[in-house]
Image 1: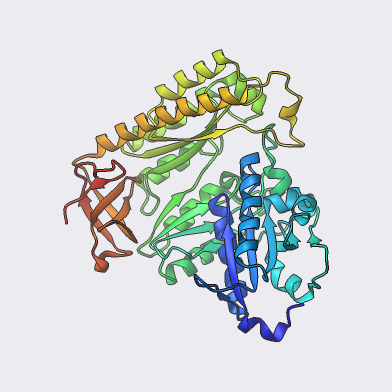
Image 2: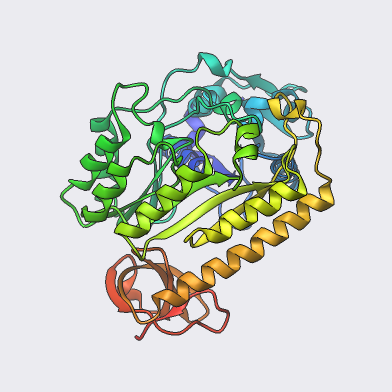
Amino acid sequence: MIDNTLFHNKKVAFHTLGCKLNFSETSAIGKQMTDEGFSKVRPGEQADVCVINTCSVTDTADHKCRQAISRLNRLHPNAIMVVTGCYAQLKPDEIAAIDGVDLVLGANEKFSILDHLRKLDNGEKAEVHREEIKRVKEFKPSCSRDDRTRYFLKVQDGCDYFCTYCTIPFARGRSRNATIPETVAMAEEAIRDGAKEIVLSGVNIGDFGKSTNEKFFDLVKALDNIDADVRFRISSIEPNLLADEIIEYIATGKRFMPHYHIPLQSGTNEVLKIMRRKYDCELFAHKVAKIKQLMPDAFIGVDVIVGVRGETDELFEESCRFIDSLDISQLHVFTYSERAGTKMLEMDYIVDLKVRKHRSDVLHALSDKKTKAFYESQRGKSWPVLWESRQSGENMVGFTANYVKAERPFDKSLVNKIASVTLGEWNEEKTAMKTPP
């Protein structure tokens, strides 16, 4: 058992898998622990506690989680191993059976990690603390401070959609959020901490306000009116929740960047119905056209899932044609994997694993084409760039307002500063656009 009076002598190691929301929550957990006296382990040091925040969006994610647990157990054999996150919520007993695991905390319990560490009695079996997710009503705020250039602010959690392929509602619970004044206060705290860019994160952020009788659009307006040198991005928003009035407001607003990430999942209405999505291709195409009409240089990223049950060769080809017709900038391609407890398992038509991989390769190639074309369209244009501390060789990198990766010779005085640049040629690796020093 860890003595409460000895937290200040303890070293903690963190490992986070999955989405930006997980990283934001790990940051909040880390602040709790360092406030109580823990210090983050340095390379070569032995940790007293390891905290692994897991993802469970696919079978591959589960596998990566198990690998991470085993690796940390080898690196820190005497550490108390704490596993939390979506995998821990969905399959706690499976995790508890892994060698070296001492404590499994569900989605809600992760934020009470210190209490569980105080009470932990290291027996032969791992302790499991996990409330049934449908009973979880409270919203736990968090903000990632690991990167002092870009902050990830959790504004919403949970999802009420229950798409047929997805376990997120079972792992994260119902949609919930803080109030608009509370969320604005969290953003202002991040700004005081040095944030120049804040990314609004959540599971289904367009559903913001459901638990507080507010609207996401009102949150956008409130954040846009903050009197500070800061810019905001929306991490991902469902097309049916991206109201035209939001697009119109951002087009003339002050602080929200011309950068959208919109889940499509499939470019055919038949598969969208199988998935139980809440929009059709016509609505999605309208949203893309609306954005480009008002913000021709906007970056639009799109999520797509390939190989779901019921996706025939003909439907995949139809999806490819639709996606190719869209004026978008990048695809985030996910390969479907069967998840226990989901309705899609009731579908008879199963896509072979090799076919799934081939379809993923096809869409990755299409994504590369789209991204190259978008970057080429920006050559010679001037944009403000927020320069980051990370380096690429002798160069530093940053992102324009419309999310083009820019590169220039490293200059320490520019770190976490916004400066106007003119985008030039590709760098040698074709991963960023050069800018004059």
